[in-house]
Image 1 (cartoon, rainbow, N blue to C red):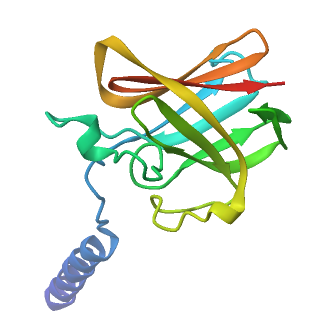
Image 2 (spheres, one colour):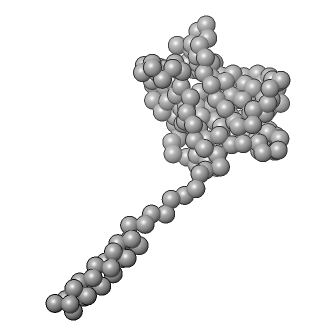
Image 3 (cartoon, one colour):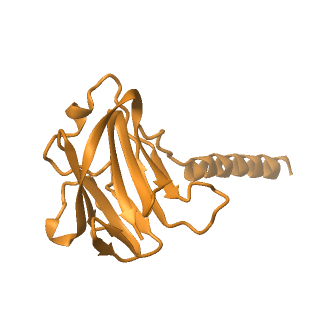
Length: 181
């Protein structure tokens, strides 16, 4: 009887040890450029959204925006995957109709203006595979300089006279992209 209990205990202990190793998960650490989303209306209490963007938020960490975002090059608007823009209703960007749906959102930064781009490609890493042939709409918007510097790249929406403005900010650089109904 004692031998049977000893063998059962050893078998149980081995099974327990094997189970611990099998069920252990490998979780990644926190992303250095965490994902975020901005939408309009901005209140979480309002379920009927007009527009939403999902993007990653890179940090300056002592660097200049110009080091991270090259003038004249297509930028994914954030870090990691290209930003994904969802329109819940048909809207216009620079007079060009954009049907409700999900798109990628890029910009081409310049000193005095940025070109905002809506593109049909989805699930794109960065802007490495950007294809201009898949652009739906483009608009050039002026760039302004703010007094306050933003450490993390940020996007916010607010209501405008004719629709919604999407504000992009990083460091002291600011740009507003107008969407109209």
